View 1 (cartoon, rainbow, N blue to C red):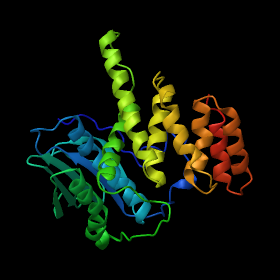
View 2 (view 1 turned 135 degrees about the vertical axis):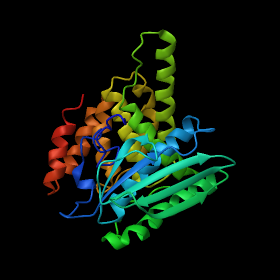
View 3 (view 1 turned 135 degrees about the horizontal axis):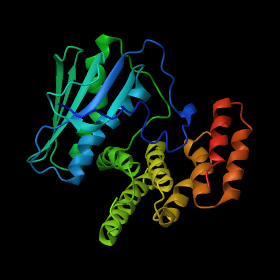
View 4 (view 1 turned 90 degrees about the vertical axis):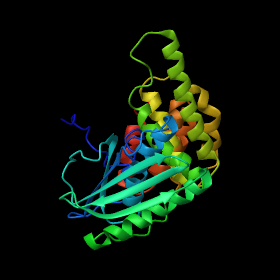
Length: 303
């Protein structure tokens, strides 16, 4: 019998760690088509840690892209399921699978509520660049399949993701960010296990920070900051070592309409820079958006 599944994520992976900035997420109308994204096992051969993060990050990425670029109501499972597993009932289910053989192959299958496959999308890639191009094509391909269920594309000036190898890192980072929220220290008190886990957390944060500082799009920065706050909330001692990477991205954001400008008010508090945090919050308070002001009250509670 299948073990109970954790509740699906119905918001981007960075949303809760960043204290639920609701004004950044498009509202979903009542009666919107629900789509459940999940990863499923396909071929275990050669699936290393990077392959696992790609497999489990893909549905998180597609759900995020669907939320910001369509009128649908997406959600994503955190863990992989077997192809034969029964999932929570949804009007549409999108099962994503990755099989690294000669090169990563990607299969996306769209199923109706009865479990009937209504479409299958396949992509192959042989390096990070072609894998990035394959991933970039998937959100539009999925929307084309589900259009008959009332899903329509919408334009969002905010949402954008990096291209090529940067997108591969972004998709892997989706799952890696979730892992940080699952506990940054091992249950064992073994010193070697603790050291290994801390090194892993640092590597994840450094990779996400490098991606965030290499592109002007705000979403890699949101993913990095979300991972940073998840590690901070879990008590990771390595967070303080990420200050330079964080500062580089924060200081580049000078436009109050840039989401990164707002997030600086939050992450600055993690590093004890209350003056910078208060300056940013003062600018944000001068606006008329009540949801921003509610968010700022949650930010002020961070120590």
